[in-house]
Image (cartoon, rainbow, N blue to C red):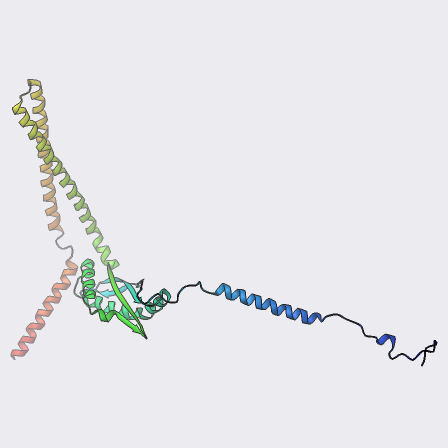
Length: 292
């Protein structure tokens, strides 16, 4: 079909002409999300990255850390009461960083605590339950006298050294038994300090009055002055006699208290006596069997 103007026929209809829709919006959104995801991932890596520091110190630098163990309970002599031992473990190594040393200390911790427990149990069996101070000294000495190689640990090429320090505490029941006696002992210590100071004061006062008397002999005073000095000397003499009497009374009371509390540690010493007697009977029995 030709147009009325007589021209050539058209190749396509007007409703089928090409329409320019512009760029694809779906592709743009997808590219935007990809760029945003890459940016957020890079930012997260920057936030989580550790501070710039060497992974390990120089080989000649010593790194140390300290760890305190939980309470280590060991039985005292007689196995009725016990002691509480706390161990402070000092770890040291060369060529590792603090974080690595913390890992190695945690790795070898159980072995070190078990070694302290074994030595503490051996020493505690020798002492009654009220001698925590003696156990602390004996236990620390026993640990120091051990072979240093026992406290060196190795994992791969890393060498770690441990140094234990201990403190000993009384068991709660033993502390309750000893508390009134220690309160009395502290009171007596305070009284002793008081009477010692009073005796020193009386001695200084005596020396002062002796000097006054010597001066009075060399340079006699008038009757009124002499009478006043005599009265002061009498009061000083009475004061010193009272101080001496009070000190003597205190000493007598102290001796009486000592005799009254001779059995203060009888529950503990009785266990020790029974053990000694049983050991003696065992020796006698073994000797008789040998003679037979």
